Length: 279
Ligand SMILES: [Zn+2]
Image (cartoon, rainbow, N blue to C red):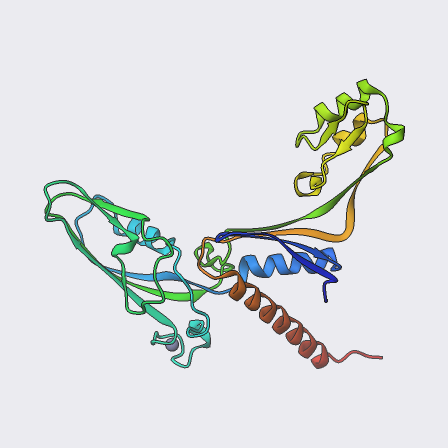
């Protein structure tokens, strides 16, 4: 499974879009599914509430804490079930975050994710400004929380990506000389929902150069051109986009993805060797 071509189309802090050429649909879907459910990240899994004067129940606060995205370091931490401590909790598989806030002001006070103090400076909430709960004057909240690595197939709070999806690379082809009817051309221009066509003064229909970034294969141009425009998905070429809330850097995420993928293949081969297949 070596892609023939790999190109970064867009990269921001929270989004990565790639054009991948030369791998099958099944393979790219396998990568998507691993990314969605099997890449481990940190999330709060155990909460001890020592004091809660807020109007929210302990359970609601715990649920909110669990959903706060935490920066993850996969070089240091292990999944509890794979840790030498047997999953009881040790510095190799667990991070503690404490929050102690008392409202000494005369007005209501919001507790934010930045009020969680971690015992590992590298494992902190991705965004310091996530509101947790509001407390009234003279109220106090004391919380002790434990974060561990986990997999999204067990709970969505451990999801490494916010979204991951792929779509076919669209191929729109036509012969300009066969499309000279001004009425037909203006209909094609008007009906394209992404406005990817233009018409020049001499009625020549033009397609934008980067149409493939926006084309959704809706077939509007094909249906309005009496079949003179062909629209098809380009075989084995995909636009793959990953959105992240920042728990894992894209480089670490992709590294983990292929590590897990290879482990699965190895496991499959081992299981296959153990099978007694009659020749
Ligand atoms: Zn441990």
